[in-house]
Amino acid sequence: MRIATWNVNSIRQRIDHLVTWLKETSPDIVCLQEIKCQDEAFPREPIEALGYNVVTHGQKTFNGVALLSKLPFDETTPGLAGDPEDVHARFLEGVVSVKGGTLRVGCLYLPNGNPVDTEKYPYKLKWMSRLLEYSKKHLKAEEKFVLAGDYNVIPQPGDVHNPAAWANDALFLPTTRERFQALLDLGLTDALRAVSDEPGQYTFWDYQAGAWQKNNGIRIDHLLLSPQASDHLTAVGIDKHTRGWDKPSDHVPVWIDLDLEAA
Image (tube, rainbow, N blue to C red; front, side):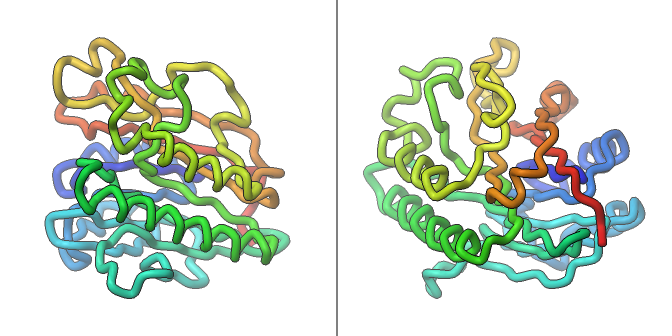
């Protein structure tokens, strides 16, 4: 079973890219971020034509997440618990049946947090604390689950081409990285780092200053796995080539393979 995440940076602008990639790679479950449209405006038809069930949690112009699955959803829930006043569309979970039980997949678009001297950074940290509580709950239940998405966190210096340039950025501040490490300390596994320690495995290249051409990238798109899911991990990949397409997203897809089968 292949599970992928991709910040598409506007689904209506990248629908052709998404369909091309889905045809190329045929993942079983896909988490999309920054769809940047309301639910009714999401271009479902070409995706459903490829055999996917589609669930969205959209928002006009900003944010927005979606789940695509070849497996039927047993249940889906929008929003991350912990702050009823947070109306941003940044989290969507789905549960599917697999042999031996269920698999829960959380699709997330974690706040950027910049500028750090505004209310945006405390919001980011609070959101990460809510994600920590969510993870504790589902770890306690000993579930197979995957948290996949754009975390807007550069975990380590090996995850950024030029660490000095990001030293004061919300994505790389020590407090941000500590909150991310707290998720790992709970027992979650950073899928990519479970299979490779190599630096320079980036998932995002800015549109400015020739970042893609210079490979001036960062790794901020992650899949974190519960122990029950990580036991089934067989492969991890980054589909870097999509960044070279015409009018691409500034992010690329990241995927994992789990030796799980549909129920």
